[in-house]
Amino acid sequence: MSERLRLLSARIWRFVSAVSVRVKILGMALGLALLLGGGILWQVRAALAHTLQTQAESESVTLGRDLAARAADPILLNDLVGLQKLLNETLENNSDLRYAFITDKYGQVLVHTFGKGFPLALLDVNNANADEHHRTTVLQTEEGLVWDTAVPILEGRAGVIRVGISDANLRASIAAVSAQILLMMALVSAAGVLGAALLTFILTRPLQELVEATRRVAQGDFSPRVPRWADDEIGDLAEAFNAMTAELARADELRREREHLRRQLLEKVIATQEDERRRIARELHDSASQNLTSLMVGLKNIETICDNPRLRATVDELRGVASQTLDEVHEISARLRPRILDDLGLSAALERLTREWQARYKIPVDLLIHIGAERLPGEIETAIYRIVQESLTNAARYAEARSVSVLVERRGGEIVAVVEDDGQGFNLSQTIGDHRLGLVGMRERAELLGGQLTIESAPGQGVGIHVQIPLTRATP
Ligand SMILES: Nc1ncnc2c1ncn2[C@@H]1O[C@H](COP(=O)(O)OP(=O)(O)OP(=O)(O)O)[C@@H](O)[C@H]1O
Ligand SMILES: [Mg+2]
Image (cartoon, rainbow, N blue to C red; front, side, top):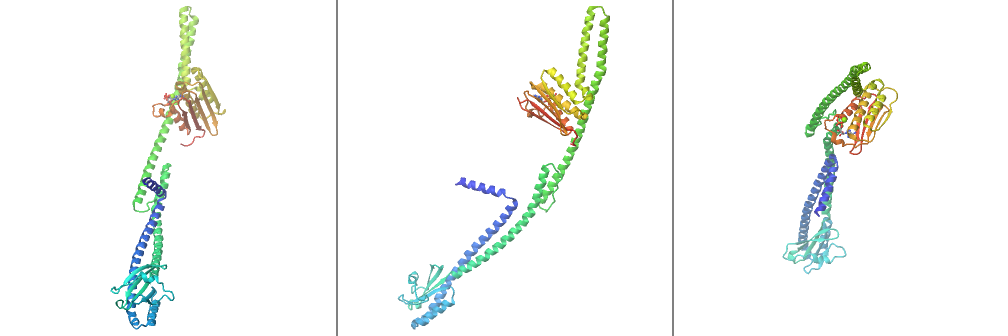
């Protein structure tokens, strides 16, 4: 039982909480009007019924007493015609009177108002003893209630008179009053609902505006302001909301400025880094390589003029060291900033990068480039090259991959690069927050150029780095 009650209350609560505030307030107003109207109607009907019943009873006694007094003389004179006339006239003049009849002291009916058929059963339902003032009983008839009063005439010596007062008029008056109350109730309810509708409109309109404005704020638009409709709590809420959005807008502006500055700084750092790398690579090439080459030529000369075989062997060895160092300097210089990237473009640079990587790590690389013969903007070439380079470095350091694939192509208005390995992969969430710069740097490079970088990986699933960079740079 209590479980059922709990379920019922839960269902009612679900229903009530699901409807809007507007419907709730209207429902409350209507419910209150109906409850109040119903209570008043019930109370008035009960009070009216009680008063009118008391009135019917006293009318029945008064009429019985009056007729008893007026019937005494005709009975003593044995004037049955006068007696009948008295009853008939009384019946005609009193619309509440249903019947009247007189019995003699032996209980025989002398006169009555029933026309031909007197209902004999009526004789037994009420009577008054000689010493009684009157006796009233309520009869339930087909027509309704009848207050039947018996009054002894001349202390019962001249018989008893009985009158029956019906409640039909009484019920009609109660019905009329009820109808009036109902009409009143309908009018008051309608006025109440109208008033409540107006009130809810006044109440919910600013709330709806607030909801709408909050949605826009949630979408990152801090411009909406709501009007202060009234000087109440909702007005205070609107003001607080406006202050909040103004503060949010200020904070957002500040954040944008900082982000702009950060981007500018980052762009500068990356550009400076590339320039620096280019400069060091050139220095290595122009100065260290030249010197090493001169050294090798000098050693060669010594070797040709020297007769001592031991010295020649040492010079030869030194020439080998110088040649190896020259190769290493070339390699370092190429890794710092491959001149081929500046001279021949992305395709050639990537081909060389993958070729050397493949040779060094003995892992096959599948390279596919579809970017056409036209050169791409320098910053995009550098970004794609560095992203592929870092992806390959990571693959060599961590992946233990069996193969790697690199795809770079022009798709519509953007350049897409995908580097995938079939190695052991990693858990993306665990690398966030570490002081590692590779993946973060790749993303920064892509985003600075208005592009995007996504990393797909899971332990045992390999790693996929996808980058898209628009050819015409979008304003970030
Ligand atoms: N191809 C890969 N296969 C497996 N794990 C990888 C791969 N690439 C990156 N990771 C994992 O992600 C981590 C973060 O890589 P990220 O390049 O950002 O930093 P790092 O290589 O450790 O340091 P940095 O690049 O700054 O020298 C790596 O430490 C490694 O655990
Ligand atoms: Mg790395």
